[in-house]
Image 1 (cartoon, rainbow, N blue to C red):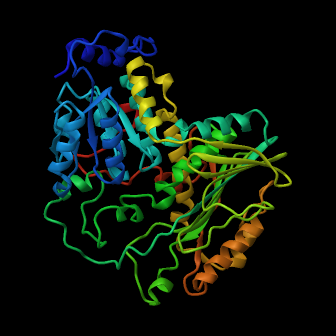
Image 2: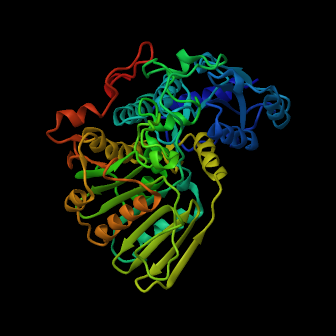
Image 3: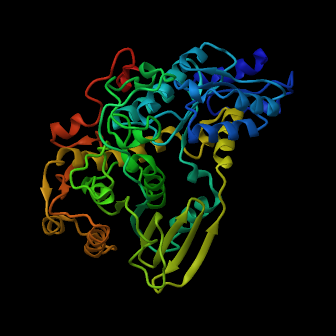
Length: 500
């Protein structure tokens, strides 16, 4: 199916001398119509389907395997449709992606599985000599992000993180505008995540669908009972498998925030207040116990010394809203960058507007297509140069780490239920952003939805100091236990970064 010369070319990337050599695979004369980059896609949910569309659309790649432990997702019609775009080459379905790793025709593994599988799928791919495209968040926890970065370096693999904003022209131009002083000295990023999330159902003991290989589905996580009604997607809101919306949509925002502010390091400290509230009001049942256990409403402050990232998350119905700028109707998902001479407002994945301090438009940035990101990855492969990547593994590691850092204070202080008055007293002040006003509006929003903070109060976690050199929490053993999973289930262990 694929010529040896092409295979040999791609696999030489394992040697450091080959990396960055700048030789183009497709500048060479092709020896057959099928001389393409072989792809195995892992995870066939919504993001996995996006991977299918992207890699079947690009003429440089051919999809050879579709992998998912749920056989109900093994759709023959989809395979036939893919074959129509690939000169008749039909991908094979696998319930265990490891069966694809021995196939020398596979050059790339793309990972769109559940969060708790991202690191191991990516690591296995690299250890088998494959390159990897790993969806956000790059990792389920901080330890796993470090493992993937170390593995990419050791095995000389090209690894792209699925933060597509990095490849959108609007964001590239907007970031340059900020870095060139377009809004003056930019010091604050306010990440706004207002996404409606309904209750996922009562906590219980539910039957595991027959077509799911639950042993493979659980993988590194404990193989316990299914405690939520819906197997797919709702794992996001259970901490054994997912990272809530902070880890689901949040990495897009933390990635842009770091990029705009030029932050390529860990913060000095992290503060979080939040909880999983509102579903008793939604169900009109004060005794309702929901299956989810990640935060759905929170405020976090990450202090970098000279700069700050503030992350605000809301999950209950609300009008489109943003407060703080005159003559601005608002955004419900995006990043606001505050500078000494103006503000940059990202209102969609590929649409940002810069304002001066009086609210006058300075410049508008438009242009987005997820395909750009996949194309960038394939171009890095054909050039055999990881420097071509717009979202290399270390960037993905850091943007995911920011999200994981915000969760740790909540988990440590989950039982520290406090009043809004106590939270207001503890909330850090941020130069360039009125956090008091933000918090007052946050409490008003919860009240308007019917949340009784007297009966279901928010949790105030400890403000945690971070050692940016060691990338651990400073003098806090309990917090450092949260850098990794307490135990990985055999045979799905993830090694230390030094043992990859």
